[in-house]
Length: 213
Image (cartoon, rainbow, N blue to C red; front, side, top):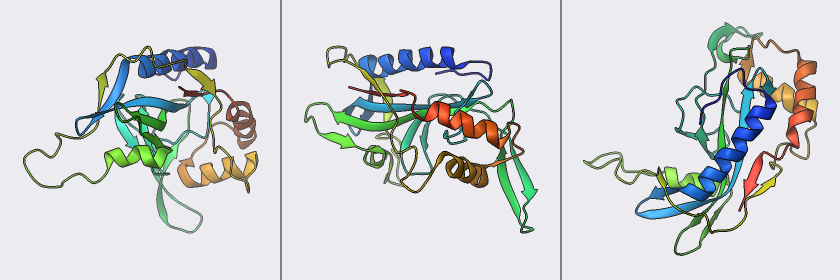
């Protein structure tokens, strides 16, 4: 679950395939004495060699759960990106991420999980994220049922199929408007030019960075 700013696209894609195989075949999520098997995941990583701008910025240790800005749940890579406070064009103090060559961040979006035993499917990022909500705020055993990653032999559950990520663009967006919206929401002091990021978005948006069983 380690990535670095120096990893290029070829090395990262090899890492994605290895991690996908590991999660599908050797791990599950345990929550409230139930096991949930990985059924569909998507990879998102940004670094200076792999500018997949659709990736949500975050600072995190590896193997931390992260509820992303759309309400889904990610399993984080070790992620690092600077934040700076600036005065925007309206004279307000805002804090934005700095998209420079040191930025390296990302995670694995969980799109589907299958409850072992019942076979019930948690379909979609919001349904998967429900495992991580509504825990008791008081008491002696606050964390006893929080979801954790556990080893589980699932090698005979079927083939793992690469696929395209979904919902990268809405019906009202194009590549330029999507990138401009991401930069407006999250980033300041961007080292790559917008034109480079537009082209990078085109290059990465249809990559088979999703995996499904």
